[in-house]
Every structure is written in structure tokens, then in C-alpha cells.
Image (cartoon, rainbow, N blue to C red; front, side, top):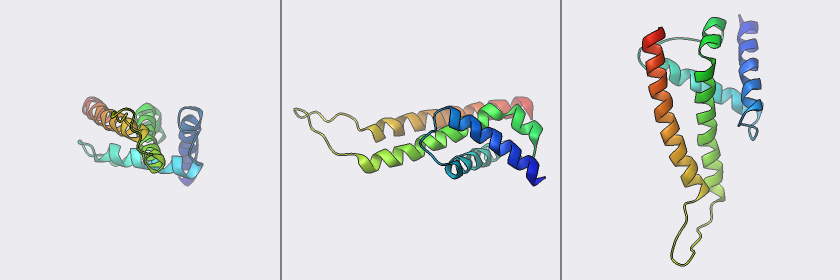
Length: 124
């Protein structure tokens, strides 16, 4: 069973590395995937899927990856927050990168949750 779980996780990590999350280590990507699966299971109707369930991973691959990308976006926002310096330009303060990422995270996370709810009520 552990071998199947490892194969599924490695396939998902490969997909994340080839997309947007090149900044993070393999371990961090695994944490994002685990977080995504955990949140997926917590959204009603409650489920108990694991990475050992290859059929589930294949069917809901895009949703799991999107949730992991959103977790990565939140982590990136925290990294950028540490680099922010206040800038004033003629009394106008442009939004910082971390503020923009935080806004994007909030919107994408809410959309993702709604998508998971719709998908779970139709498919599960």
C-alpha cells in the first residue's frame, strides 16, 4: 500500500514542479498536497480519501493540484511579506506584492472550496 501511495504522491509532485511552484522543495510540495487533500476531505460531504486510492487521485487530480497550488501561493505570500518595505510615492503607497498575493489567495481559495463542494455533491 505504501508503494501505491508513494507513486501517486510522486506523480502529483512532478505535476506541481512542472507548473508554478518551482520555488519550493519536494518536501514542501508534499506538505501542500497533504494540506490540499486534508481540506478536500473536510469539505462536506465529509470524506476520508488517501493518496493510496489511485482511482480517487486520478479522478480528482486537478482539484488536489489546485488546492496545493493555493497553499503554495499562501506560503509565497508569507515569504514576500518578510521582504516588504514600505514605499511612499508622492503620498501614494502602492500595494505590496504580499498584499496582492494575499488577495489572490483569498479569492482563489474561496473559489476552490466552492468547486470542491460542487464536485463532491455531484460525484460522491
